[in-house]
Image (cartoon, rainbow, N blue to C red):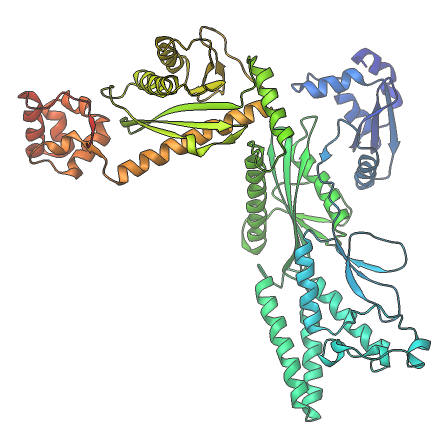
Length: 613
């Protein structure tokens, strides 16, 4: 729909609050939005220049606009959420969370059982939750059964069956975990007291449960039933210990919902902490995909609505890092600057940052655990993207490493079938290159590696990655040509910053799609060679394998030598300094010793690092 076409219908759109729906030519729902003023909001799509391609594409596809007037913006928010959930329009924020969460169900039956379920049935039973972790629910259920006697059997405990004496108490009764309602030893009223305690525990409200136990303890004490009083005392202590572990900030805060958001391009991450009676009873983080450059507050407001509905939250206060629109009537939004609420918000922010980091790490390709077919598909994709003659089942990658411009070494890692083949990893101590020369170092180690493979008649890799730009790639290709191996394997250079791939002789680089499986594999190979090279370098330094030539100067100790090397980066640079500059750095006496050593021609002219024999 063009701006001119919209102008013809703009007067038919009301100024009232409501929701609007965009449809394409095939009557497919593209987008659902809410607005304080429908005409102004919809009109904004046709009266400004969009920087986002996706927004521009949406406007081009609109063929029909439908709207619904509501009484308030809060109603518009609720209706928008309901429609997005039902129709999942392509251009709306996409909640990437399709899990089903467990509940604790209090079954509608005589002396209700309590158990874990993922399915909600409309049979009158009461459901507590949902909960984000099955393990935590089971742990909580075990804790409840240790403190509150609830039956675990599946007997049909109707009043008629009990009166006929159909059942006998089991071991749970003798262990004190059940009061024996099956034989009429516990009334339904007393059983319901236990259920109420269970509900309080599930909501983090331990105070009334502890108070109830204290009352029972006092009654037993008055009746001289000290053994029963002692048993209840153990339960009280257990609950108090549990409470001490559970209360994160303060039990005086009441019920709160805490949200934080981290937006990264078209992806947003939202963390949710449900706080009840000062206790964090739920924590959950979700990932959302945005499509139309939605602002941070818009994305967070959407997530707040979805999460509060999913977890049946009734809290009247939301803690958030940014102001939110009036999403629900009577809901207070607080942006804390200090105090206990700020601590809760900081905890939520910590969680959302951790979640994003975990997602990022998972995006780096790890083929362990995949099937052979899945591994091969990634390699087939890499072959296609780089136009390789063969499937790269054998990949090798080289990288140079040095410390503060000194101590050069090189490393090579090998991947077979997409996985690290650590037995084939190699370290190289640079032998023929003096000083720091990345190009010459790369030429030496590539020559040494493939001369050995050629002489031993060992199969060559299909793909060789040189971690560096055109210079390192050119140096590597000099060795390949000298060995007469040109064309027998594909050699590419990987630019360190832009993740561009260079082929020998090409002026333009190849950029693979950022999230492609091919680039993920290349990233992993590169990261592995960095790790391997740095570890080797660190180990050699710690073992004293490297020797600083300055330490050979009589009267100069290791501390002074390291100081000079750190400042001037190499012995060659130290050799070029004037007496005045050296004096400012290490003092007159030591500067004179160093200056005399080099100026009198007694200094060696070898590389600034020498390996011990």
